[in-house]
Length: 97
Image (tube, rainbow, N blue to C red; front, side, top):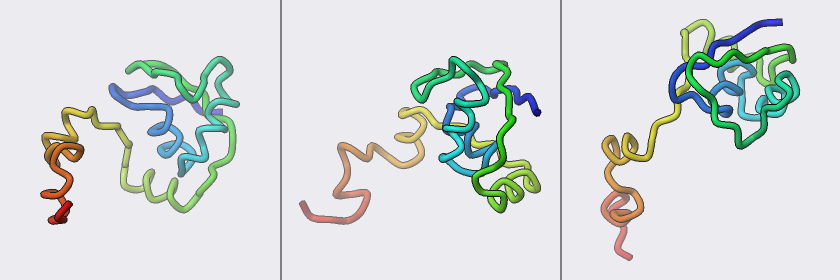
């Protein structure tokens, strides 16, 4: 068994990808951590147990080799990086609507 420390802004989906190699790992994460649900809000510094096998060993190996740790962006950060997708869809993709 392994214990993981959640980093700030990591979601249950981020941890599933980081520790199981795919979002399907969210079900293993929930199974390994009673009380955790799909809608759980994780907190930086929270400890989670990892007991189950990876869902995608190739992705997991790549992430571990390259020290990749997914962290979800906030809506404001997405807008800052890409523009306001919802209000500027036609300009984001040069489509006439």
